[in-house]
Amino acid sequence: MILLKNGTYIDWKTLTLHQSDILVEPGVNGTLRFTNCLTPGPSPGSLPLSPGPSPMGRGEDSGSVVQHTIDCTGKFITKSFANGHHHVYSALARGMPAPKKNPENFLEILQYIWWSLDKALDLEMIRSSALATAINCAKNGVTFVIDHHASPFAVDGSLETIARAFDEVGIGHLLCYEISDRDGAEIAQKGLGETANYLAKRQGLVGLHASFTIGDETLNQAVQLALQTESGIHIHVAEDQSDQDHCLEKYDLRVVERLYDAGVLQFPKTILGHCLHLNDHERSLVEKSPAWVVQNMESNLNNSVGLFNSKGLGQRIMLGTDGMHSDMLRSAKAAFFAGHDHDDIDYGETYRRFRNVHHYLQSNGIQGDGENNLVVLDYDTPTPLTAGNFAGHFLFGIESMHVSHVISQGRLILEQGHLLTVDENKVLDESRIQAMRLWNKM
Image 1 (cartoon, one colour):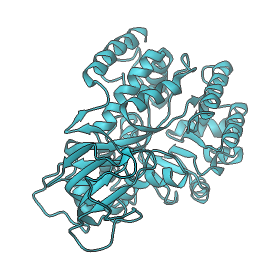
Image 2 (cartoon, one colour):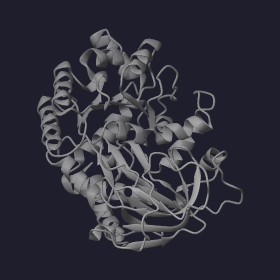
Image 3 (cartoon, one colour):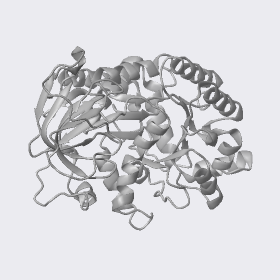
Image 4 (cartoon, one colour):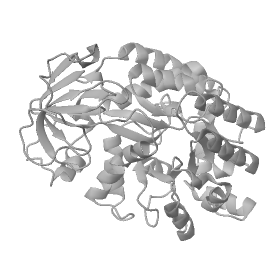
């Protein structure tokens, strides 16, 4: 158990502030106990509150003994962050040599960069990518990641490799393998098999690349697998106009219409990535379904594929990084600033989308993102911070550099900016070796 002393707790749902000592219980179902609350007002929403015995006391089992005491005087404590759409496989791409051909459109970006990279991955590279990603997440206050993975010539065991690396660092996860027909039917079947094997023992999703690389047979098999495993589909949707053009030409349907007919949108766990080039009818189908949309503004800007517009998509919109980085605070700011002239987004809506991933996880019974996932912010603001002006601090003040301590599932994984669970230097030394192997192979 961890004791946070003298901190100011910001309830992530109500934004009310409470000066209190907090006992953090360990485990996937661990809760918070507030003691010595110094400010009146409503209690933090939905949290079990109990003055209880002295925080230094011993309960009925050893789990109630305080293992760590952290002085949070002058610091803010709030729920840690989560990423709605990541790509572990991109971790070793930073600084890599230029592609053989300078891409002139989105399809060529995929062909000459990302599909070239994912074909070269092996399990050693995947493990290094996952460890490096998990470390970056922890240092940015992110304790849960929804990842979408691809490695067509290292399919078998890839998801378990990522899961074990995330577990080692202490990051919760909801993984999937990016099933696609782009490398042939045999590899598509391997993707389905890897997914089935993984979902038999861990929580996860059924991943698909995008409509334009998925034939009807593979699409239908993926939906059936999602039904059998009570999961959902995680897929890129109309990220570029070329996805729509292909769908109209081959199926005489728009992308969301095709996915709707196949049953993709029936699952409350389904995640639709990007959703840029949709017409009003498609947006209506998404809004009326239980599926979720994940926005990835910086990736869209980087690939010049268009800007996200939430019009007609409903309220189930969350934020991701699409493998660009692991800093969700940065992604929220990008969504706000780039959305000024293209989206109906204000201070409150930005924060709502930033936190919506928690609602996705909780409403679907996904484990690992409970209230005992916390971040301590060493944010020495020159102006008052209140519930009324929190959104202004969120967008214009709080940054990842303010992350001091991170608690994941009641376990302290980051202390004063230093990883406690793995040897960061050793991991990065190995990742540089694997990056060179990858680049040479490409």
